[in-house]
Structures are given as structure tokens and as C-alpha cells.
Length: 156
Image 1 (cartoon, rainbow, N blue to C red):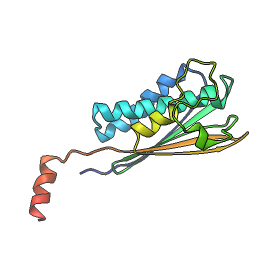
Image 2 (cartoon, rainbow, N blue to C red):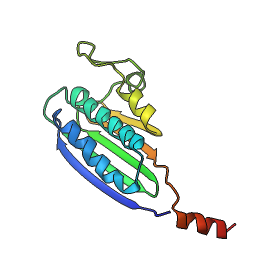
Image 3 (cartoon, helix red, strand yellow):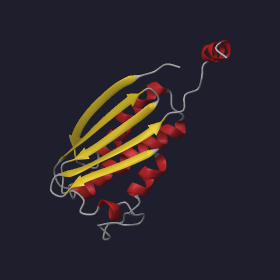
Image 4 (tube, helix red, strand yellow):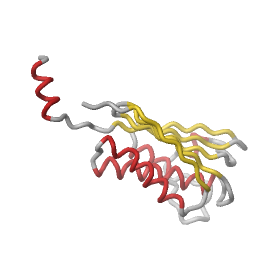
């Protein structure tokens, strides 16, 4: 099995048109691990939810910057989405399914629940007035090549 250790950092304006950019750039970076279509869809959905939260809640649709760091270490992808917005007063409450701080918007309040469902790990850190950092991890299941299988058999 090939192992990769690689990192990408991208920063962009907090406008909704950049949601799709964020999804695509992370998916393209992760593609070197040869993920399944389902794994890519999971990562894209989680990234989209995190970026949307930054735009709507972190900056309240105002001006700001969103930073995405993506790390690949062996078969694990870590995506860190950071905003420098208003922060979250009660992270635990915000992570409850169906909770939303903006009930007037036609949003479901499922952003964190989706991130948690589609990724293997989710960590949220936030400081009021400083911003929020969402860290998500997913292990990409690697298919063994025929050469790897031969080596494994020889080592038994």
C-alpha cells in the first residue's frame, strides 16, 4: 500500500458561491487516495456543511475569510475549517440535531449532525468573538493491489 503525507491550505471569502469551490478543491486533493464515490460524497457534504455554517452563523452572511487545511497522513484525511467570525456560545447545544440559532432561515439545523454522520471524527472548538474551528477526519479504505496481496502472502 502506498502511503501519502501531504497538506493543502486554501483561504477564501465567506460568500455562498465559494461553498462549491471548497467542496471541489478538497475532493480533488483527496482523490490521490483513490476514495470510493461514496467516500468523496461524504467528504464533500461535510465540507459544504462546515463552510455553510461559517458563512451563515460565523459571519452572519457578512464579510469574512474561511480557511481550509486538508492533511493526508497515510490513509487518513483531516479537514480543518476555520472562520474568524462571532464564535459559538454553547458548542454542545449547537451540535444537537435540529438545533439552529437562525430559525427564521429555511435551514434544518443538521449541519453538525451531517458532519458527524459522514466523517469518522468531528471536533469543534469555538471562542465567542474569535471564531470557530471544525476538525473532521475520515479514513479512506485502501484496496490492496495484487502486488501487495502477494507480499502479504509471502510474509505469512
